[in-house]
Image (cartoon, rainbow, N blue to C red):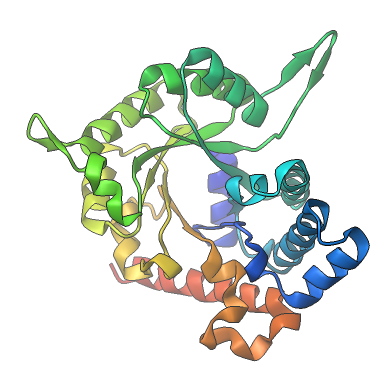
Length: 308
């Protein structure tokens, strides 16, 4: 799957991923009203609004982008109907030949981690039959429990030829409370990055590993160090746009071949119509605003890479 992700990036010329992280207040009134008319102001109504909103964005952008990253919490908050919308979104994106990164941030002890891995990336056995529950292509993984929590995902990735992105240095302001702590004269995130690179050596694609890393766009200097520590690791970079990251900050996340990183933008794209820059599109054309935001992001990053 890492090979497919790279192939999609080369085909589109867009090392970006659209974060499908819907909140109800992002969804234009006309979509909410149509969903509530059919299902009422219920969890089912909210899930239908989310699904229709996502579908509009995917239809408007799938030809420009290599991948999407739905954040499962935004769906779980609406219970089982929300998870159904999540699954419909995953399936629809795969129909459009997009790589799907399930932003699930799981990490637990062995058997529990194995169940998460099977549920999201693998197959589950039910009597004599086998089922594929969620069927994402990648999943995000929290490494706080160490190898015990990550190896079950690696085992499933090896079997299914899928991948993971391990949290190394996250984009949120308080990430440094733990991740920047100095251990034996080096910050913790460097130790984690080295471990990710070592795990990745066991699961190599053609040039990059199935085991990727998450490093926030808001910490470009740290990204520069981690890029050197993890030369064969693909880096998922959150924090672009709404969290303050911009193309010029991101060049160090990429290798000299122009690959090695994929940059995520969520509300900066899916709620673009709410920004002054794209207000001309209006609520009715929210998906067209998202398409323009994608084009602007591609231009920003490609220009920065050309000028580095």
